Amino acid sequence: MRNILVFTGIAILLFSACRRDRIFSGKAQLEFSTDTVYFDTVFTTVGSLTERVKIFNPYSETVELTRVYLELGSASNFKLNVDGIPGKEVTDVIIAPFDSIFVFIEVTVDPNGGTTPMVIEERLMVETDKNQQSIALIAWGQDAYFYPAINFGDADGNGMGDQWVLPVDKPIVFYGYSVVDTGAVLTIPCGARVHFHSNSGLIVGHQASLKILGCEGDPIIIQGDRLEDFFDDLPGQWGELIGGIYLTQTSIDNEVRNAIIKNGTVGIIVDSNTNANPSLILENTQILNMSFFGLLAQDARVEAKNTLITNCGDHAVALRYGGNYIFEHCTFANFWSENPRSKTTLLINNQFRVNGIDYVRDFNARFDNTIIYGALDEEVEIDGDESEPFNYLFDHCVLKRDTNELNDPLHYQDIVLNPFPAQSSGAGQNPVFGDISKGYALFDLSAARDKGKPSSVLTDIEGNSRGDGSPDIGAYEFIP
Image 1: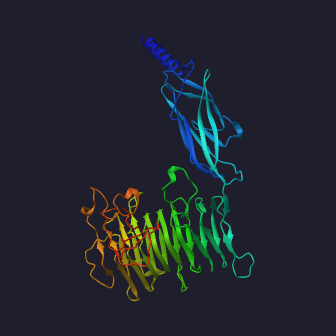
Image 2: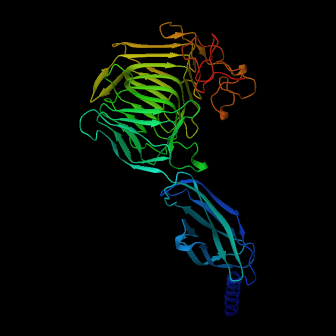
């Protein structure tokens, strides 16, 4: 009896195994998760984001894929990984009944010397014994100028410095850290498109200058080199080592006008400055989506107007170790959502410690018609040692503070403090910006409207007039 039971059990297992391994013999019509795979603009020689296709077997029997391959074979710009197996062609792939596999696809575009985007089209082919199916692969490619950690220096060696102007006919992609040095001037002119690869940035060195000079209505966009939709607002894509744009203490007369700097680690670092002129002039500029600081200035001289700095994982603006600063009609708004944030939107500070020794430096800062706001209860951190001059003034500003004690006229004048949400026109709207998913322009019932003082900054960040005597606070003038 026992032998009969054992035999019966073995027979059942063998029968089940045979049923699982039975191959579909008809004309298999497989199902795909998409009929077309798109790759947004990819720079030549720079690999793309990996896209994937799911191939589903709708049958109660196993389907064998005799070949999964690229239409152009070894000449294809695309690369495959089929169910864990890489190659331009993969054979003998099994899909169990009602199961599926993934095909992962990447593309690299070859240079063609052109200035306009190119389109690469091909098909991913999937064959079974009696059928052939395919899906379209479409990639937009763009040739570019590539700068592999070069030195924009004084090639003549005469100490006068060279004038470097970046081209505008094709995008520019920096690999590694490039240096502007020895009195040179690097100009990024209107029309330039600048991209930084991972772990890349720009250092401005001894007696050198950086001039980023976009046009009104046509700002220069500085960002990472991945242009797929997934990377549109993703922080931390470039500048991982020492920040994105690093203005050293011996750089001079740096200017950033009409620019958008986004999706890096630190937007701009301005180190100690010993010159009478500003270390940096910021005008009509946006610094967005930085994983650490938007603007980090250390004992520097900065003058900024119509500047928007938003959504940073650390302080959006940190003015440390002293310095001299003027901010007019700026908006600092931190609604960082990548992970919990504990640092305030703004930090001002005039002290630091090195090797157990405390240092205190002069600090002077003025904020006129400026918004400092965010998701925390406290968005301004003041850390001063008054053994040295520690002067700051918020004049006609909107502030988010965890205090109602702003009675000192040496530091606060005509402040809009913690505007109450009931002033907004809709439930859940931000009292300053309205719907922040649409940006940081003001809305009709904004607490910043008509609360500013008369200003010499006659147009806003978008060129709109501030013609009346009561301008709006912040970088944007409300436009009905």
